Length: 509
Image (tube, rainbow, N blue to C red; front, side, top):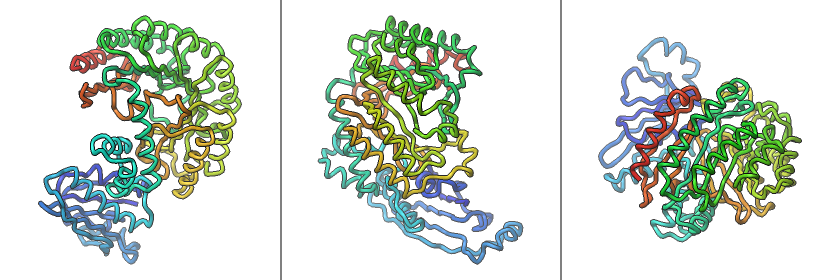
């Protein structure tokens, strides 16, 4: 299917594009800014026209009629003669506050959303929201508008057409985040992120800047040397600011050898003060990188939280997506970590993987429940353009919209059986079923770093390949962003440039 969007002004195109994409994730879409005789119904299956006026906006959806379908090739060749089409939906929106850009955008999105629901025959769980942080909207309602939780639930439904279940979930998460963040003065501290961009193999769905270890093994030591220089500068820039949380991610950090990991952690202990540290996470991630030697190194340092991520407990799927480890290795790694004293273990699961539906998700959930982790994160598969799986999308069996509802409900019920509550939430584009990623945790086991980075509550200083530094000023406003390059070769060649970017940004604090 091809969808054409025609605007008479460059305004809200990104929002409308992503909203329509949520209903038609596989469609080919194009934006144009003026209509000419060369724009034919034969060029697209659906044409959306959005005409902005001073006090009103007219929205029209034209659909190619069934009678003209067989004539399309000839009409395309013929040129300017217009193919038969029909306007299936048209409305004019009277703006309540023409000078209020935010309110105008919200009104327009609600109108377009209503047309999409009529055309497609179903709503979306998150209504007309296309951003990745719906909880932040709720936080604003609770903190800035002083709403009660019940009022915020209703506002999410009326303002953004969010389903009752998702509105309640967002409010629950926002309320729990507030409670956790009230425990310390997060604005006067900062968090540290360190990226290790190596993995044993690259999963088909991955869009992170990961590099297969076998192909890049000669670059590991040069990378750690460059990373150390960046960490030294970070420590110098932040020496008068309290360090609250550390997160070592990737990639797969435990792709390093135990000796390399020990050297990195020892270096960090020398550079930074851990006296006020509330949390130290290392993503062990891939079970095929978790050994007793590696876990012993982590246990010898002040690491408080690790992730052991199966993604699925079905061997057939693991083989298909390129994980290259077994279900048994996941179970063994988990038990080994418990044996060595780790009492804060998170596990990740992805729903929407090829060939997996409700039954498979329920079986994975049951297997994870048997292990009884301290925290659990469910990710709805998001097929981004950079993922290799997207190149072969036609061969995968997608999880249906209805099936995704069943899966997400089953996962939430499994988390509840493990005595976990949702504590952070975010969304991505092109997610299976238009759902979300949710972190669940037992009491006292929520990951503060996840909340701080997702809600942009605190300065996060990123170090390493692909890492980003985001400055949050004392009043809570954004002070800017400095991102490192994703390419490992580029990072090694331009480390000084990455350090200088960070220095310039952090001097604003």
